Image (cartoon, rainbow, N blue to C red):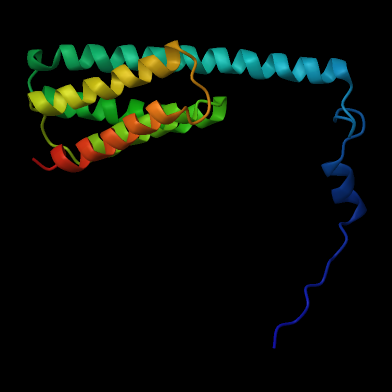
Length: 164
């Protein structure tokens, strides 16, 4: 038979550590504090979008220069994997859920690939183009029916061409 949970009140010294009345926020935020917090969030969003744009440029550049280096496929795939994983993780943090979904699609596509052919390179290029569109048009949230159709198409492409 299950026992009832027992609620144990925190010790006074732990309560003092958790609630710092001199440095912490009041439970009711003033309009000035809300404005200050919003500015921090907007600044962080700008930093995130700058970072994501830099990652997109790096992936596009790596794809263009793929034939120049020995073992280029593996290094390009590693770079695309790492950057798409970062985009996948950062998108939802700043309200760009579509970036997360497309970043996940790209990450899933390159995971486990050993080499790139022209078709796979084109698919990766399409993912990068879609990420650029989302970022340039500031499409927040999940998008609309068009974006849902794009995600569905990426899923079909991934299933069809990943293991060719």
